[in-house]
Length: 236
Image (cartoon, rainbow, N blue to C red; front, top):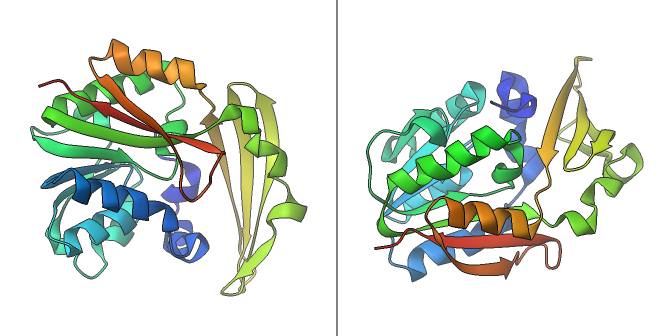
């Protein structure tokens, strides 16, 4: 399911301004280059930040996104014609043979229901060529990131829009929170989200169950000590 924060047209248009330079994408771009990928599948591509960077560097790119408002923002950007855009998630992908599949920006955590998570891993496995690689990140639950999700710690003003986040509920492995956006014209938009905080052992077990071989578990270069980056290969 599409997250509330990405499904409203006005919030989707604001997303890139809130996220800034997206230094977190640099490591994924380096990975795509290092493994010699030609076709990259970007699951949960959002407003297209990573997909368009890849396309500008000559990669063949497929971007899949369930939130239509975010996908429309991506389709309206310069260079969007170089990307194959899919309105949907990884559970019903068209036939392809991707060299690399990615889930950046903690997309994996937004897949809350166990059945959807397993269907996502199956769908990506089917979309990868033999020997293809899946790379994704997820927050380490031991770091308890949600303890900083409050107005005092998160309040900011971006292009005249007041933004903050407030924690709603913690029932591990699920954590729910609410973003509030106050626009200059007085409109107030809220978006509620829930993330699933899976521990490393659970993720490794799911990867193995769905036919991948775990190649590496790395530290996130932009958030050292706070996130896991998993690399899982589809066997040849």
